[in-house]
Image (cartoon, rainbow, N blue to C red; front, side):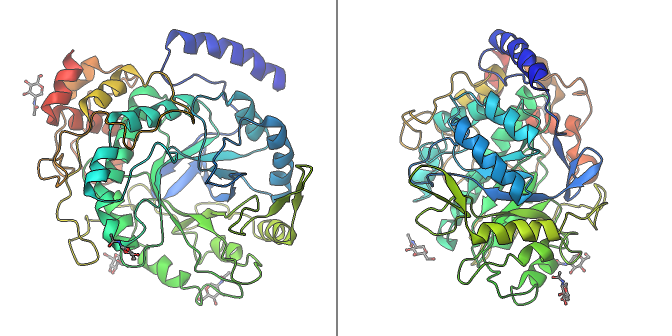
Amino acid sequence: MKSVFTAAVAAASLVSGAFAGRVKKRQAGNLPPVTVSGNAFMAGEDRFFIRGVAYQPGGAADAADPLLDTEALAADIEMFRELGINTIRIYTVDNAGDHEEAMRMLDEAGIYLALDASTPEYSLNRADLESLHWSYNTDYLQHLFATIDEFAGYSNLLLFFSGNEVINARNNTNAAPYIKAVTRDMKRYIGAQADRRIPVGYSAADVKENIYQQAVYFSCGEDDNARSDFFAFNDYAWCDPSSFTISGWDQKVELYSNYSLPIFLSEFGCITNRRDWNEIEALMSENMTAVYSGGLAYEFTIEPNGYGLVELGSNGAAEPNADFDRLADAFAANPAPTGMAGAKSEEEAVHLECPAESEDWPLDTNNLPEIPSSAEQLITDGAGEAPGLDGPGSQTSGAEQSATEPDLSNGVTTSEDTTNESGGSSNNNANSDSGSSGSGSGSGDSESAAGSVNAAFGTVVVAAVAAMALVN
Ligand SMILES: *[C@@H]1O[C@H](CO)[C@@H](O)[C@H](O)[C@H]1NC(C)=O
Ligand SMILES: *[C@@H]1O[C@H](CO)[C@@H](O)[C@H](O)[C@H]1NC(C)=O
Ligand SMILES: *[C@@H]1O[C@H](CO)[C@@H](O)[C@H](O)[C@H]1NC(C)=O
Ligand SMILES: *[C@@H]1O[C@H](CO)[C@@H](O)[C@H](O)[C@H]1NC(C)=O
């Protein structure tokens, strides 16, 4: 297995040299790529449940890419095996680093990567409307696209998060259109440059006033690209000793019962009392599997916030704690269900209407900011060089912003069919089916690759500047 992979790596680097700056071609791993169908993740023919942990040794404050220290990773992978997990979530990677070895090691251990594409330096600034608009710029998008270039070729890249807890209170709900625009832009880049449709979605904070509206907002509208592929949220409501009803998870299952996309917990694991991890029994039971697709326990290493499963000794060796053992037991005792476990089919998963404006959802438009024209060009040409963790950052870089006003009154509507297949001629997407109409139906076959490609062209042609960039 190993030697085959190495030979392919050599071949792959030749290929990527010829298309510098675009998605790097990789040898297919052992794990089947995960796709979305209805409100389920699928790994090949089987439904896929996320059974994972958050993994960011060193914590978020001094973020380092844990995939570049492959010696430490190898030791941690042994513990991933003991935990019986199939996914890790990483919040920050160095998109200028080489991830070939780490991704192969994870693949051989049966582990997928759920990856946050933003970093502390390359992210939206939610402070106010001006800073949001200022930080949605070409430098930020270039960073995100370069991360896609680096990771999209690995079949065990499970999904990209387009943001994490950007909205953390009702009073910064105005970040929502910017998050949705970033999701759209990432999906369009993947559609143009990658050879498979990698799921992209948002990881929400549990904002009690409007998390449901957030979920619906990110799933609504006629533009396939602007709709997320999944919705995830960080949920610490289950504090052992608890239950399906005491935690209130029963009401959440009911609340999201008509939701059209896969849902999972992007973080869970309340530490108020001793963690017995009984929520895993509920997550894997038929009480929840029709609506939820598993989740990620927070988090692998002990950091100052006290959530870890392993502690780093002074010699650098990691020691599992009692939490680790109980989590391993909980995963072992509660395997993922087989079959579709109640999930909705593509036909049944009808997208909900966008949420109405209200006190808790203070958005008066479903328009999105249009992509900056120089970032539009990157979708066609490829991202170019990755800025890496040492890059200067994007939030205040002054790079080109959206031509749309911050009030979005002249933004790009997501409810209008702007499909124009003639836009396809200058796009280098390999999809040969770009001639289909993609008439903007809100459900049913909207997940088809052809529909997504056409929707991408649609948002292109609606913006005159962007359309000119395509012609050039
Ligand atoms: C936003 O709301 C949070 C609490 O929900 C509060 O702590 C914060 O100060 C508010 N920010 C502004 C700018 O009003
Ligand atoms: C789900 O949809 C059904 C049928 O339209 C409706 O009766 C029900 O109230 C909806 N449930 C929620 C929680 O929105
Ligand atoms: C499933 O829900 C029922 C009814 O609320 C509850 O009695 C049972 O304990 C739940 N099972 C699990 C595994 O959470
Ligand atoms: C679609 O593209 C064609 C050819 O460029 C153009 O003539 C037509 O006006 C466009 N339609 C729309 C709706 O933009």
